[in-house]
Image 1: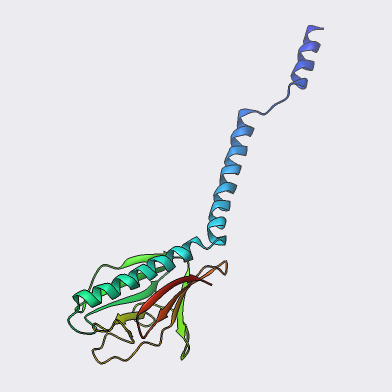
Image 2 (image 1 turned 45 degrees about the vertical axis):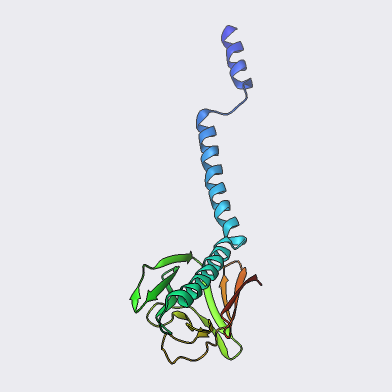
Length: 181
């Protein structure tokens, strides 16, 4: 009779074993990790960060050109894609400074009223070159001393979640306007 009472008590006990608890916590942590990554992509954080870094870099380039360049084209910046990462590299008197990563797993395109929208590509063939006139601050189409006015009027950083962040450029004055579209 005593053995019968013991087996009844064991079958009535409720709760989780330690193994079940560890498995449940592991599954929850994996799901939370996946959700955090997706939330980051949904709100376009990477694209917004890239847009801000790029707009600041362009403004710094203009100041550097107006204060330190001797001739047009002495200081310019190249924005390019290498794999899934976006970089910017500044050249001073033809010598490149270190490449700085400004984004990853996003896209960048640029365009204007008189040019078609173009996707940023690799450094050799699809890079965007940004250069300013040393005396007026206007954006130039290339670092050549005889370059004309740039036709690039906007740069867009976008995420896979269709979040688009735009930098508006005024080529005649070199003004950079940071905005979200």
